[in-house]
Length: 150
Image (cartoon, rainbow, N blue to C red; front, side):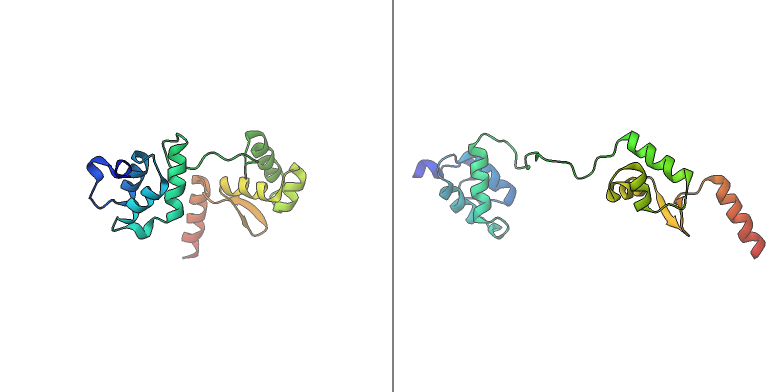
C-alpha cells in the first residue's frame, strides 16, 4: 500500500484543488487512495468523493484533461448565411411582420427567426423592425428634430 501513497513532491503537503488532479494522475492504483489524498487537503470541501472517482476513471482511460467530451446530437441553433439573408430580405420587404410570420415565410422555427433578428441587432419598435444602431443620417435627423423642439 505504501507504493500507492508515494506521490513524490506532493507527499505530506496540503493539496489544493488543482493539485488534486496531479495526484489523481500520479496515483494510478486504487481510487480510494486518491480520495484519501484529496481529503487530506484543507480545501477538500470543494471536491466531492464522486468527482475524484470520475477523475481517476478519466485519467485511467488515458485522457489528459478534465474538459467534457464533445456531445453528439443536433445543435441547438445553427445560422447559415442563406437563411439569414432570406430572413433579412423578408423583413426588409415588410417591416410590419411578426416573428411568427417571418418564420412561416422562411420555413424556419420561431426561435431561429428570433435568434437571427436578435443577432442582427433588430428590435421591434412601434410594430416595425428597426436596427438598434442608427446610421449617421438618422442621427443627424434625430438631432435636428430635438433641436427644433427645444
